[in-house]
Amino acid sequence: MTNVAPLDLSEMGITEDDMQSVQAIRTTLENANKHDIVTYGSDAATSAASCADELLSKVDSKDISLAHKQIADVASLANSINLSGLSQQAVMVPLIGDISRFPLFKRFNRFLGKAQHQITAQFVSAKEQIDCIIAELEATQDKLRQRNTQYEELYKNVNTEYHKLGQYIAAASLHVKDLKSQHQKLRLESVSDIDAHKVQDMNQTITDWEKRIANLSVLQQNALQTLPSIRILQQNNISLVEKYDAVSSLTIPLWKRQFTLHLGLNEQKNAVELANRIDDTTNRLLKDSADLLHTNSVQTAKANKRLAIDVDTLQYVQEKLLLTLKETNETNGKALSEYGDATLRIREMRDAFKTQLLEAKHNQIH
Image (cartoon, rainbow, N blue to C red):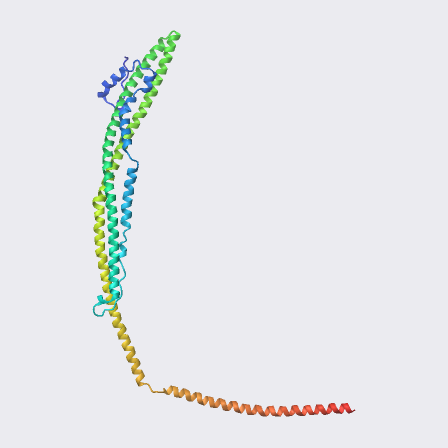
């Protein structure tokens, strides 16, 4: 085997400690045929591929989407609890004696109690659903933890694949360098057609090996890129597990505590509102009574001090009476004057009529 220039081991992902394995692989390449070249290094990825196949057989693509849906369902159920339903308007009732005996007040208490019962029952129903979803989330957490263990095994296999591919690439590179040296020597020494044919075959073999080395380098680069991807995937799973744990152990208990406090605060709010409405009703009744007493007393006093007939009324009647007499006399006097004028005009009309008749007869005689 011809000595060749040393390789850049770090670029191939190996060290000097791997050279013994590299040389062992290299010795198997002396009599490699085309099929051996094409399949060279395939066993390096077998372990990682088997692990990936096993992982894929166990992975349900719905797991993560189901977990996100469960979180959304928890939020939706919590939002569906209508806490504002407890904030009912207080009823205005009179503050006379024991107000609890009034039917209106009893109906208010029954209505408020019914509303609180409905909200509480709604929360109990939501709580049961949330607890069911939390149980499913815990099952999803277990799956994610198991998946991380499987990803760790895949990481080890891919890392081994990357390292093994580096050894195969190094061994093949050394072999190619050896072939190139032999090719150069044979090309210089060839004198016959058979020698030329051997040179051509060796040149093709070198090309095949370089192509295979390129493919293995691409596969090794993909393995190198896969390693951080697996770590990111594992970290994402860990983050999801922590998130779901926070939801089940912190968020949901916090919601329950806050709901309990909200119930108490709404009860206080309604009680204060009812007390204020009662006080407002009491003050309104007192003010209304005082206003009515003042109005009635003043009107009564005015009615008692008033004459049976107001002087203004007598003055008005007298003025209207005098005005009636005056206008009646004026109308009668005007009528008498008009009667005289009418009589005079009628006489004139008769005289003119007689004169016209006489003249007409005289003209007929002549």
